[in-house]
Length: 123
Ligand SMILES: *[C@@H]1O[C@H](CO)[C@@H](O)[C@H](O)[C@H]1NC(C)=O
Ligand SMILES: *[C@@H]1O[C@H](CO)[C@@H](O)[C@H](O)[C@H]1NC(C)=O
Image 1 (cartoon, rainbow, N blue to C red):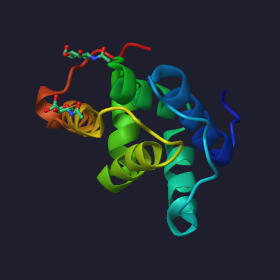
Image 2 (cartoon, rainbow, N blue to C red):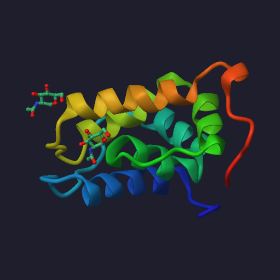
Image 3 (cartoon, rainbow, N blue to C red):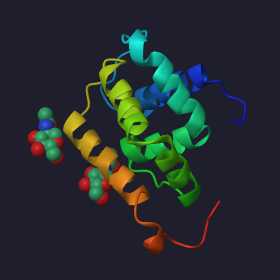
Image 4 (cartoon, protein in one colour):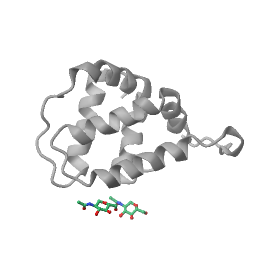
């Protein structure tokens, strides 16, 4: 897992969506080449945490403190971009409204002020 290329991570995220979301079609090639490099960069920064964060968004998974920090470090634009990428590619047929809500919840849950941030880091 430590040496996944950004492209693999994106494909991996796509396959997560396929695996966990009902009514999803076979993934199609990414349709937006202009932002693809940007998303590759985002996925590279998230590393292993990409899997955890997007399970959190798409499958109610828990995001650990470690991955929250990684997520916030990549920025909101990356987070929204990756979620949007999964929603708009691969013939997503789930409830995008619900996914976007959970995406906000995951982001907000991670970007709490440092003072109220839990001190224990579970790994
Ligand atoms: C996720 O959790 C929310 C609130 O706990 C619940 O309403 C929703 O049905 C859950 N969704 C999935 C896919 O488990
Ligand atoms: C999607 O989820 C939202 C919020 O739970 C709900 O209001 C809406 O009716 C749902 N849309 C569809 C098409 O199921």
